Length: 358
Ligand code: 2RA
Image (cartoon, rainbow, N blue to C red; front, side, top):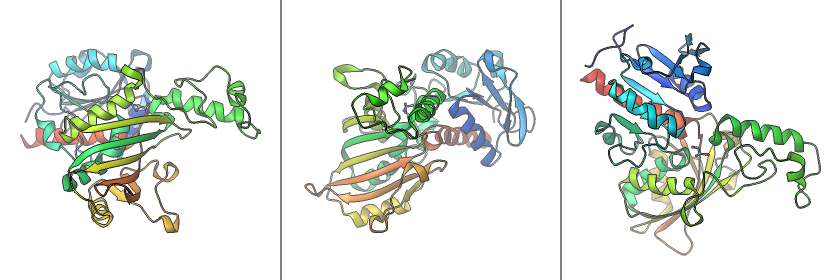
């Protein structure tokens, strides 16, 4: 085993970005999961240094991001903007930490594995740069269910629409929705063109349009030919995780007035004929997936019930009417948990098991 954690002989974990929306959930998850870590060091921008945050029932003081902050760290979970990860993840790795990074900085780097423990846990062991990437929350909100179906039927094509929660855009996204909701609550707005826009004003936060009483067909930045960066992430990451470099993928990303939990409609076409009975059997038994699908009883997943839970929830399972090789699904996943903090923690736990067993 590599050098051990200073307090208990177990690996030392650093949480970089501990004060953000995802960092907060990371600390909750670390407090709920089996206590495998020695020291848990909380790292954030110098602005947050000195704050105390609760983890494992103890108050821990946040230290400022610096090279020394990684002294003796075995595993570092990063949830910071792309440019901060691009600069600091290699520094942490050079100091001997295995970095599990939730930014977009390294996801498509061929020398950085992109890992979902239910699908490709083996990939986490091959990390030439000492960095493992965590997928984007939109990809993660559907990919566990699709990985299970792919293993049985052989995936050929995906056509996806997302219904993304505002917390995907961080605390600013949540603050924006709450502020706009307070401005439109109890009014008759939403009945004439532009009335919502006039009520909420120019402060649309991280979104290009008002999000209260609205849906916004946009997430991320402008990529080539009218696609958004978010849509390209879902395509490229799905291909990499599933090991299907030529998978056909068409995605439209939409922001909806939901605080937390991304939803997606998925049209998935496979190599062979599918049956709903077999698909249901796979989804009902796949690790990390809950099948909740009884429309006759009004039972299907919705963000209001899925938020705060770990699994990928699947409902509305149907065979395509015009293609016996395709399934239609409605999928929900908490974008801050499995979509970010949970998957990152699961990868870190895989690495810890490797370190402890070495
Ligand atoms: C979003 N998927 O929902 C992004 C965050 N990573 O905006």
